[in-house]
Image (cartoon, rainbow, N blue to C red; front, side, top):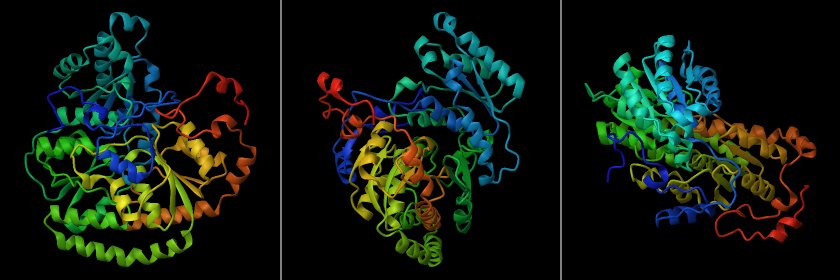
Amino acid sequence: MAKVNLSANSVPIRETRLGSITGFDGTADALVTESRCGIKEKVRSFSQCLGCSTSQAACMVILVQDAAVISHGPVGCSSCFHEFAFTYRVNSPLRDVEKPTQRKIYSTNLDENDTVFGGAVKLAATIREAYERTHPSVLFVLTTCAAGIIGDDVESVCDEAEEELGVPVVAIFCEGFRSRVWTTGFDASYHGIARKLVKPARERRTDVINVINFWGSDIFKDWFAPFGAVPNYITPYSTLERLSRSSEAAASVQACPTLGSYLAAALEQEFGVPEIKTAPPYGIAQTDRWFRELGKMLGKPEVAEKLIAEKKAEYLPKIEALRAKLKGKTAYVTGGAAHGHALLSVLRELGMTAKGASIFHHDPLYDNDEEQGDILAHGVRDYGDVPNFRVCNKQEFELVNALNRIRPDVLLARHGGMTLWGAKLGIPAILVGDEHYSMGYEGLVNYGERILETIENDEFVKNLEKHAINPYTKWWLEQAPTRFLEGNCELTTAAVNDREVQV
């Protein structure tokens, strides 16, 4: 059954489309097994924080070079958008973008009156003003919770503005209350792009491969060159022209299926661009599979085998040397689903022991319904089980509890707000924003050297632990990390009254 319906103005949320969950406690192998049997959501009786779909949608469209982005809601809903503008400029050297264009970000600034009388008139005026100020090639309108609650007809306003201005005006329905799974925002932005911007192919090109990613370094240029192809990156640093012609590519690959699953499926289902469905190349075993699948799809398996042999000859000796130095070291991983699973494979390929993980959500399968895309399943088969495996929905109080119990040698984190908890507990922590940094054979060397350097230079975090104040009580740190997960909470009034409030 097709999961992509571009005739609808919004994308079904991940909970209903993929059966995604945000609560689990067990082992990695148990999660893989239960996912195949229709795993059910476990809700929390207490939540500390959540990610917002609107910010994830903004993350994708703000990085389109010739676009303007409008947040339709209170101005506070766009308060986090500056980080994507910052990311755009800071990471531009990774893509050889010499002169990154200024980001064009606006808010309709809905107020109390608008929530009563509606904000459609204000939205139309904002679209017109944003266009007159910056003359972008495309405008994206992101809906917020306020816009969704008052029921503004955003689609009609955008259609009318598009006809008036003569440029695409794309409505992206990404209200935060739609889904517990924040990555639904990625799907929402890509739904809008596939629905309004991607055009039917004028020609089929064998020399272009779509790469759906965040903002990593340009490693795919070197990887694709032996196959006679170049990458078309979606969406960081892309343009309207390149997005519209992504239907002409020979194939689509992803750096992270959590991010790119929906768009890759849309490009294959609606525009005939085949997707490399095997999991991305993290760890030697999976990198072998990925390059062979790429060679097979491009009709050049001999090129893939030659590339694999050359890469292994160059990097395996370095990987073996790192394994000898990292043997016996332990690590804990926290991050988004697919990339968190990828990091588990990387550290175990380097000879380290995975003591556990706090992953933000879990997708039993992605939009292509292919088990070969399941990075976690590959990791379990290639390297064995992972204990203390939790799906935590970004609940930092659960992460702190787990780290306090397990005390690994290093914490690997995908998001900056998580690394400080390792430091406060005297655990060295690594944040690598470039998701390509650990990909492929060379990525194992990159990450291994980074891990080794971090572990060997732990004096700062050891001193910090002696002076840091932990906001969590002794009572909480003595509980199981999943105390508030469905089926685990038996907290009584007496227990609340008796607990200690100081660590």
